[in-house]
Length: 252
Image (cartoon, rainbow, N blue to C red; front, side):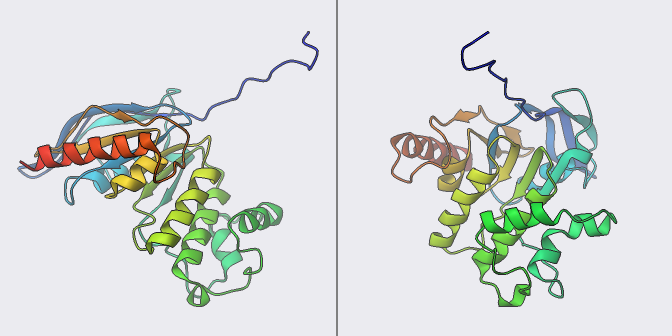
């Protein structure tokens, strides 16, 4: 036995496995035979031009839409739909509910007992510990997004899907909320859609680009270092340059 006791192995959440996913609307094919895997505990950023099918792909993975064919499953071989938290472009806070009520909304809708201690812990972590009874109309955009992050984390889901959740924020607030998300989502399996190469390179372990008609996935880009990376990190700048080069090539 070791002097300091046994070393406990970290248990990773399930990853996401997508196999031969195809989406068609009548004669129009959005994407065809998409296959990829996100390993458990990784933060992956998905980029691509508007209309290429990113949000459709995310909704299919989350069980909010159906593919024409193909499968989505956890890397543990089990379905993932009941193990997902979803955070969209809008914070979607209910205007007539205060911050605490919005954060615990999922449990309220399921008629579950509210975990008051967990909700208060999350509100403290996102800097809203004094805003429990505040209505969304009295919050800034950054505060609303922080409340949305707390609501997402309250669900304790191992897999988190995010569709441009920080796109409406100003540059300074966006950077602060990115840092917070990277910290609080560490150890979860995360798929983030973004149009911003800088955001992708700051937050992602791996980057994927969806492009073409029908859309295909290019070779994933791995970013060295631990998120959130500083904007002047050489690895971030290198990966951002590689992404921009891919975008230019895909636009030709």
